[in-house]
Image (cartoon, helix red, strand yellow):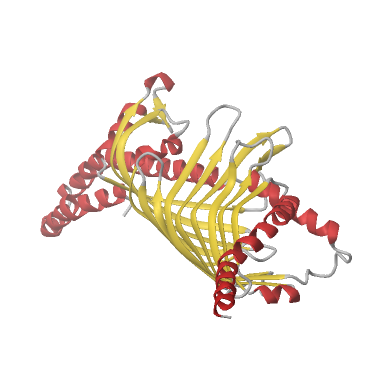
Length: 399
C-alpha cells in the first residue's frame, strides 16, 4: 500500500510539473494560426506554458514577422509572462492581472509605394478590422469580447522607427533599454474621449550616442480614436545623433548638445505638440558649395552666429491629423525646427547689425537736448549702454 501511495504521489508531482507544458504544447499551434489570420502576419510561438489553476502563462518567445514588402524580420518580438483568468474566457472576457514583456522589440517601418506612404503597423490594423468585419454577423453590433490588462510591465525593451525613402534619405529613430509600466488598459474603452490609461517609460534615445529620456502621462489607445496627453523629456543629448533635422540646409553639424521637452496632446487623432529644443555649443561649418546665403543671410556670417551662441532656445510646434496618411510627425517636426531656427537667426543677426546704429542715433538725440535735460539724458544713455545692451542680448537669445 505504501509503495502504491509513493507511486501515485510521484505521478501527481510529475503531472503538476508537466501539465502546464502539455497544455501549452496543445495550444501553441492553434494560437499561431488564429493570430496569423487576425493580424495578416506570420506569428510564431515558442515554449508556451499555461496553468489553468494559477492562471500563469509563459512564452519563451512570441514573434510577429513583417509583411511582404517591408524590411525582413520581426515587427514584434518578445518573451512573455503573465497571469490570466482562464474561466472568464467562457464569458468572452480576456482579463490579465499582470503581463511582463522581457526583451521586447517593436519595429515600425514606413515605406513609399506608388499608392502612397504606408507602414507595417497601419497594415495590420487595417487587416484586423477587416478580419473582424468579415466575422461579425451584425456589423452594427459592437463586439461582445472585452480585453483588460491591469498592469503591463516592459523590461529591457527596444523600439525602432525607420523610414525608407526613394531618394535614399531615410530616418531612423532608436529607443532602447526601455523600462516602464502601462496600466488600466481596457478594450474597447467605455469612454472613447477619456484618458483612463497611465504610462511611465524611461530608457535611452539614440543609436550611436544615446541620451536618457522619460515619458509619462495618460492615454487611451483602446478606443476607436487615439487620445493621449504625454510629456517627454530628453535632458541632454548629442546633436550629431539627428543631423537629419538640418537636412537641406547648407550647414554641416560637427558637434553640440541638445535638450528636448515635449508636451503632446492628441484628441480624437488630432495631434498638437508644444516642443522646446535647446541647442548648446554648436559646431557649425558652412557648405559653400550649396550656395552663399541661408534664408537671405550671408552663409558664413550665419554659421559664425550659430557657433557663437552658447545656448539657442527654439519653440517647435507640431500639429496635424494622425489619421491622415500624408501627415508625418517627424517631417512636421523637422519643418517646424528649421522655421524656428530661421526666425532665431534672422532676429538675432538683425539686432546685431542694428544695435550700433541705434546707439549712435540715440547719442545724437541726447547731445541735442537742453542743458536742463542733460542729467536725464546721461541716465538714459547709461541705461542704453548697460541695461539696453543687455536687452538687445536678451532679444538675440530669444529670452
